[in-house]
Image 1 (cartoon, rainbow over the protein chains, first blue to last red):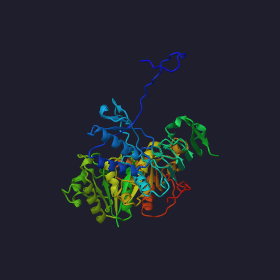
Image 2 (image 1 turned 90 degrees about the vertical axis):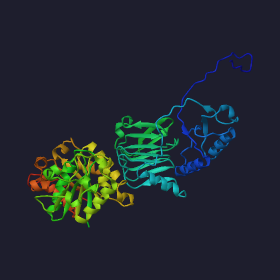
Image 3 (image 1 turned 180 degrees about the horizontal axis):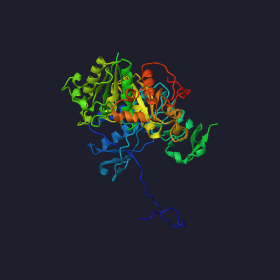
Image 4 (image 1 turned 30 degrees about the vertical axis):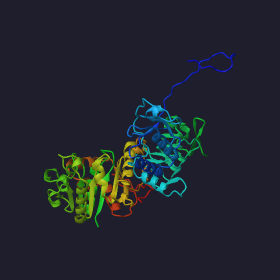
Length: 244
Length: 271
């Protein structure tokens, strides 16, 4: 098939379409839908902003829904800020126009469950912060983050008064402030916030990341080691500089 | 009021068992009643270090499962009469420990003794978490090297989240015991120095045990170093650590076998 571009004088050119694969979260609604939605509500409440900016695919293999039912479910989800970019296991013919396209051939990847309930101590901190919604979205940790501990706070900034040990990680939707030594991993701006920064009193980090751009210890200028630094994102470059 | 102390480290081979025996003996020598409990089910060693391997009839698993009475499994030390051992089973594994059973045994030991010292197995799995579960305090044994320090850090995280006290929102007392310290090697930079270890782990120091032939010999003789060579530097270090555990404030020194250097100060006090 040729694409006819208006204007007879223009030479005909072919258009290039590129294929690219992306990672998407798959939600699998289970009957009864009303219960499933309220379960989802609980989950969203305990981790505000989790779905912001994340591509979501709806897997309809566990439910039998009419075209109308699917349209209703998609609008229910978009009311919760979950934007569905595709449907799986749906009958394309039954879909009303305006619904996301049917996708096929998805391959599962390892469980990307980011807010598993098995996390140690920090989970409760996240939950508490979410409960008191009138408090500003920040998390303050007054004890050191020990090796093996993982702290995930998608709502905002994390302040650590002690150190982050080697083998520990802190992930924040906003910036990360460390008043001790940063020896583990710090991942700021995880929800797609490129303006997030990382500050620490002493950098010996294993890995720094902002909005997915990262640097490992090997890529950090040796002269900065042990210094007070900040890290920020300049375009797609992770910059690190001494504070004084 | 009995105090339950877990001796733990994460990493294996750093000196948990040796330290449990030496501290247990040092505490018992002050006249307090002490029991040392081997939680390393399947790889028991504490009986050997205590020199009681030929007197083991029943063990911790038997008591946990309720098939015998606690008093039948306890072995009284022949040298220090207030010192007792509750050995582990060598033929079973850690799955034989049940949560309820361990809770019941610890509660019963609390009534009988002033000190209950639990020798934790290495690792962070079932045996180690059950050994720390009911502790009031923990002694974290660390060697001045990076892998040991990182594993200790991991264990401290678990102590703050998986113990009964932590789950009630209380904080477990944590003490750092640095074992196998070699002042010469530390000075040459072949070992982490004490300041670095304290900076990384940020918990109070209870003692520094020098690397010593006396300790090795004591383990092989089946007699804790605080009994077999009570005047050695290592034994003195364990004795002062035991006194700090009882709440005494003693200035921190690195014991040395040469006389006169004993008072080499460290400039940092045990908190």
